[in-house]
Length: 260
Image 1: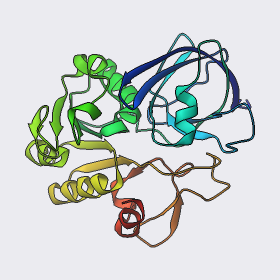
Image 2 (image 1 turned 90 degrees about the vertical axis):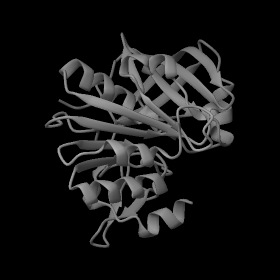
Image 3 (image 1 turned 30 degrees about the horizontal axis):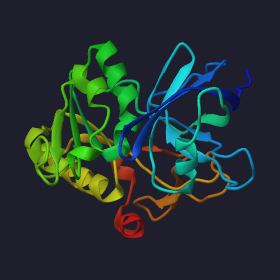
Image 4 (image 1 turned 180 degrees about the vertical axis):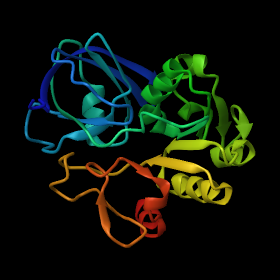
């Protein structure tokens, strides 16, 4: 059966939850199925300026209402912040590989900043499956820790670089204290953070899956705008081959330099 990848949605709610973050709810009648970790591309303007759609992780879905956590960082996201209820929105997707459906033991989930959007539906899946897990959620400052009300049932271990909330230090410092070889680690956040997560899991010989963030133009692997390098020096497309990769696949040498 052919999968429908283009959708017309209606904005049903838009809430500013912190200084630079909004929670956007869009009703999509067809209710496209998605796996935790997948994303959709969203048109941000009714005109051709800006031309390109923007990628956003699917936070969750309930009765056809899809929620997206959006950090306002540029022109496209500022346009979304001006959306109003009832506005028509064009979307494509869901795209990419999500997190594994079977985790095989206890899980450590690590989210840095807006990376919480990629792992939230995965946390819900783990909870429903009865898989033991811990969530480590970190940011530079408490103002960048969002969705804390939604995360209460998951009892997150919080950290901030400046010590304004939770553990005073980096998320990866907490991960070092918690990780055991029997854990499987699932992480999303900035490239430098993910590079450290990979090194920690290699030292502990723990399995690890990373959800990578990248600039995208198409979402389905044609434009090659979101390519990264694997450990053999070959290119991979974050949108199509990822965004979730086994940590051992990804080489961070060029990626981290390019994304700093």
